[in-house]
Image (cartoon, rainbow, N blue to C red; front, top):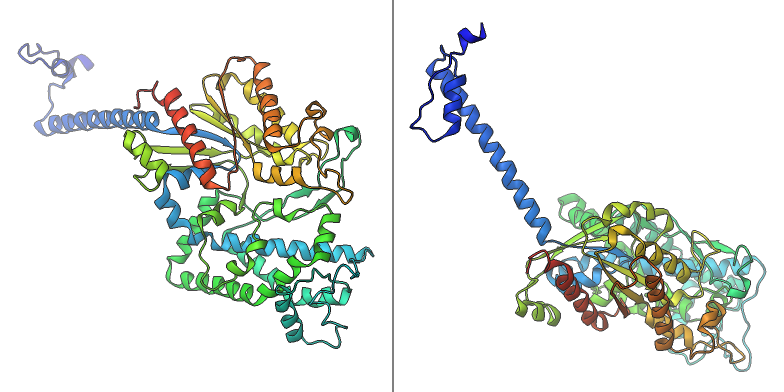
Length: 525
């Protein structure tokens, strides 16, 4: 039957199209002109779709080839954006106000919680001595039943202008101050709602010295709920911008932010009194809490942030902390001539318009198994190792020193076959905090933090930032020497990520190295 329907016909030899010859063979004998046109149109449509798919595949391959993919173990993408995509960065500045306010409010509420716990367990705050004049705040307070809130506010405003260091000597005084600052609890909750859904983490005190390594746990952990968004920080900001662009929701968002700013302005004097009081500082020191070293530290900028005209600066955003959960993907495109670093690249005609994709996979142990899919097709790994935490322990495991954990993580990365052709950039980070910590002294004049207590190999070397940095640089390079790729080049830099001016040149070096070692081989430049 089929032979009757499909009769072979001699192919048209004058037609150079091989499909035409095949068409002559398989065309039904009784095919009508309409059927033939429909069949040919279907064939042309199929061919067009095939060609479009091939073109899309070629375009995607070209785009992948032109992209710079960087895996970041730690948060440094904000510095790259500030250096190389400033307009996009500037567009986001105002969106950061809720995050910065949240950082400030959380710090104040944390201090109130710690000091309240100190009193609850019976510890007394220091009392004035002949060398420590009474606080302007406490000197005007005899008891909670005989002082008005307006008097307390006036006393706290005079606190900053006074030369006395003072203390909060009485429990009633703290209760009054806590009552005046109680609206900040609601401000914190409202700001968390604006930014996104949160979670908590555990924060631990500094680790025990190496001599106590067998003790478990090193120190008592204290729970400290920290707000976190379960999405990229840039997505959180985009959500705020989206809300602000929608009629009714825009008015609600603006009203909530205005209310928060109004409360901050009203509580500014009391927040400064709390943070500036010597007794409160003594409690924090006794509990091993260093607010200055924590991410999102704005307690020295209370008056500026509480101003109704406050607008975030570049430095504010770099200092702000918005903890994220999971692997974050962030993309930006190099812009033209926005700053000195980019203008130099622009003159070379290399990077303007190129897309960079950064994968921030974080450093928590619970997320490390999610990293491996991102090891494929990347050009470089930027590894952040904060040196200031040489005497601290992991939140996930208080038996493990944080710098030693960084070394273990580094060893695992160095041993990965997937990364043998990937450029490694090592940022020995938080050198400013390290410098402050190395200079601290105890009451009897001894060093408060000795590196050799936690890393005996450091020995009696000078406790100076440069010497400590070089010691850890050698430690990380020694790990690479013991790996499968002992001759692999490592670009190591001591940096302070929140100081953009001091890291711009470092970031340019990173960029140039990535371009030179990887993109050039891919014929991108």
